[in-house]
Image 1 (tube, rainbow, N blue to C red):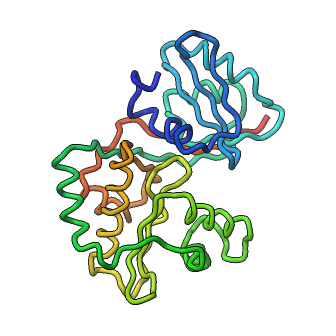
Image 2 (spheres, rainbow, N blue to C red):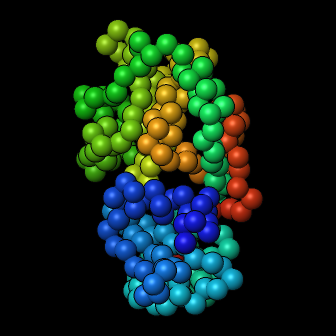
Length: 245
């Protein structure tokens, strides 16, 4: 199935490879035709051929639609399988971007990364700093802090240090996609964020993965860096959404 949809399937494949799976449902064919999996944070992701949805429809029948459900990275052609069952109460449309690894891409990333002397891994002591600048968690939220600490411990990470001070960083999400990118305001426009991102992308490629990310529609902030690295935008949209009965 992933061979048939190598780009569409990047998120669910990343969840499987990273172990971010609380529940995994497959149809019973010798070669599975549908995949439905739930992350440890509770979001569902899925994959099938939209022209032959019956196997995935059977898996969706096994969910409890009497309560709210949340879905992440939903390939938009699969949206009718949800809207026929429940009301969509919220949605965040995104575009997926991916970077196909080639020798030329790796050479460009190494050139952009440059000297690695000031590159290193963020440490547990940096977790409050990273959380302070993460838009998806409050600085006083213990669960968000635990998530940042887990990522520092288990994710692929990169950071730029000046002395002992961490001034720029990036880490992979639980699906293996690069994210958490931030450079402290006084140190911007010096290229350190680009170097940190290049280092993280090289780590992802070295692991044998295709780097990918999702950008919310209308968010122009990361587009310059995405274009600089040569990411390609997928034609279809991907959705984060919630349902209610």
